[in-house]
Image 1 (spheres, rainbow, N blue to C red):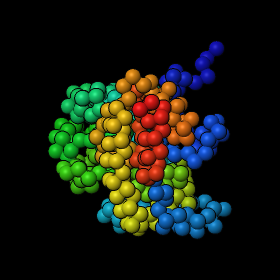
Image 2: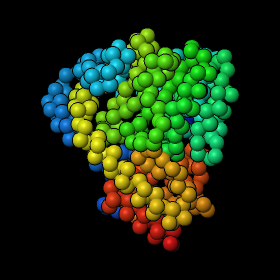
Image 3: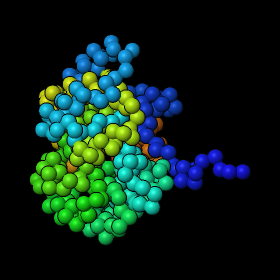
Image 4: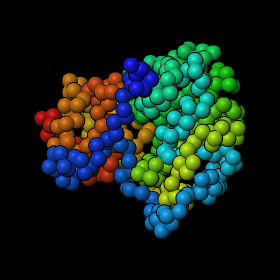
Length: 365
């Protein structure tokens, strides 16, 4: 009897998202849950986006604009990128999948770093494409030289996350420029900048300028983090026009819903919310880091709105479960190859104090 699905589909392990608050309350009988598992915006959604979403709900009996003209126009005005070089999507995860499905042919390869964002691996495997992974250096950092060493004539798409998820680590523009200069122009380099708005380190990349020098560079961004629209699933990409045109052919019609389109366009104008969200992370990340270190954790320096904290001798899933019983949700990263680590979103001061108190209790410190 023939198999029901191809082997590459049968072998897939589904993506496991962070536990929702309602599920934790139901399963563990707790309340006032601090969810610090999914790198969401601790301040909530952009108020301007929320009002636009509420207004748009009056029209949800209509199909959305399949071309997302207004949203692309807003992105174009905000970033100074021609609309023909912009693609919008149902979250940036859809963009990752579309890039593999559109451009990676049978016999070609996807190249990335091991222990980076799992969506790159899932997209490659879901389409039966070979995934090549370079090891991290110093446990937590991208090794661009190691990635370059694994380039081959079969490499079609390279995924780089900067800052990385789940580590929060980063590389600088001069390193990226050196790497891009050594990559063939017919190989796409996809730079995933989901956390770009939180970065304040000197020497970080200006990807919009780099696109002018490297036409094979594709930039991915999202409305999920700084704008607080994770539940609406809205991402966008900058790429040269012919790449966008091919991706447009492959994507599903109406892939971005009407409410998300309206909210995204409005969020771009909400500079106050962006500033407040960034300031919260920059103020609270050092507080949370200090508290975690005092509890004996190895905390990886981060340029994102989360921290990776390694608790030696504490199995990740066991610690995760103990924290759930204290009404705190973090993200174990055992599946990423960090068996004793937790990824913890930077929350409000109250949330950060709650996770530290819960850790102090369950660790007996």
